[in-house]
Amino acid sequence: MELFDFLKNRELDGLPLRTDVMENRIASRGSGGKKLLVAAALDDVGVILTRIEKDGRARFHLLGKLPDGELSGALVTVGTLTGIVTGEGDDRYIDFGCEKVELTPGMRGSFAFEPRRLGEKLLAAGLESGVTGYLLRELLVGPEPKEETHFVFGAQSALGYRGLKAAAGAICPELAITLELCPCEGVEQGRGPVLKIADRSLLADAELCEMLSETARTAEIPLQRGVFETTNSAGAQVYSAGKGVKTAALAIPVGRYGSLAQTVCESDVAAALKLLRAVVC
Amino acid sequence: MFELIKQLSEARGVSGDEGEVRELIRGLMEPRCDRVWTDRMGNLICYKKGRDGSKRILVDTHMDEVGLIVSYVTGDGLLKFQTVGGVDPRVLIGRKVRVGERIGVISTKAVHLTTEEERKTAPDEQQLFIDIGAQSREEALKEISLGQTASFFTVCERFGEGLVKGKALDNRIGCAAAIRSAEHIPYYDTYYVFAVQEEVGLRGAYAGAYGIRPDLAVVADVTTAADLPGVPEHRRACRLGEGAVLIFMEGSTLYPSGSYDKLKRCAEKNGIRFQEKELVAGGVDAGAIQRQPGGVEVLTVELACRYLHSPAGVASLADAEEMEKLLCALLADPSLLER
Image (tube, each protein chain N blue to C red):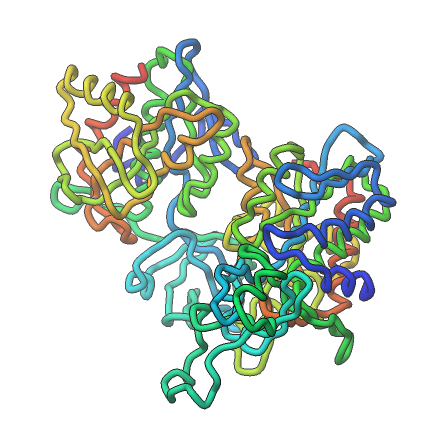
């Protein structure tokens, strides 16, 4: 499957996934060796409805973070309805254009934004779950892993990768690679994926980083190294599970990081997939 | 219900110093349960055998309260402090507190010494101190010590039409509902965890749940209500007098829709008055319990309370009874663990 197609349909049906209590989707393949966990985000920034006014307008809470200026005018889909975010500050709501809406508090919605090509890049909303989900999906359906490997599409990723903490606690891997996005701070798009050495929440395991670097060198896969001051890693939810997990974060550099719609280079994603297959399979 | 709430509200139990309220609850739970013990974190755990021992339910309700901790004693015998938990700093001046066996008053610069600018904003804790009537540091240190907690000193009383005011209604009302629910035999084996240190980051709950490994948890807590004139409807969160508060999301927990529907169905089936919380605000122990290894399904029932985290919160006794009824209904329901 191509990345662009996955960004359009996010199809995980047909994969041998089980769902845990926190709604993580998990698959396991391979046996023996060191237990490895590879994680992606299952969800992305969205909304949850908190109150439906008598005139059909819906109050909401943002699931995740977005710059304030990007909300007004954004299109949101909840169930079969699409509405537009209107208002400002505390008086913000979604206008679905009708009074009678089959909506209830607690329903969740996503931002409606069709992926598109922007020159040599792809532009899409929900890129964290889109790109990392694509990578994990392709890894899962690819060749058999050489060792016991657990593939976790982590729930509540937009809320701080909460599902991943529970999944890692149950699986107790020895090694983990978390798939993430990163800003172009000291790294560039089009020059390969990024090994996140450190950020606010994680100091990646030096040995695992060296293994990934060596694998990239041997297979002639471009790999950048990054130290970030402003990001938090999914890996931070994994490394302290059980007796501790040697954890590294493999990130794809994106443009407009943290915005509703971000850009990505397909070549960076392809290189990341090649590296993951070289490590896992 | 009121007498129990009053007893619990007036007991001391600032986060990290829950001894007094823990012993009170222990005395109330021992006749109602099969086994009661304290874990390493200080959580009080009470086991009650159910009709069916194949599953475990955990009922979590935190017993700690927000308060103050003495950080320094000045040469004049005044106590400098830091807040413990999210204390509303606007409501501290002039409040009566208990520090050990001493009564004190929270004070600041006399009003005639303040500038016009200073009078426009509430002073922060750096500008406040507790006056226990000591004349010197030596005199003060004879009766209190650094690190000692100070709790608000508020008489819990009924007032208005069915309302109650008191300190620490968050979460002594949750504790009261849990204690009363323990008068009935639950369907499944049930562990009540009266958790510590919720107000400083859900700390006790994680350890409590980790030791029990429940199949499902029910959290009972109290939440903010801003149902006052001038507050837009959509910012009120919930309202006094409209029953138990059901939560689909708060600051620490997003509840899967299947779990929320289960909670709602139980309330509807048992004719319990309830409302849905209309604002994502606050955080409860569910956040620490849900993220246990493998995840734990959690349902949360709350109670509306005005002036949360202040020396005198206000809640409805009728709402407290609905909260208790819902807790009892959940614990009696064998379908609770169907997925």
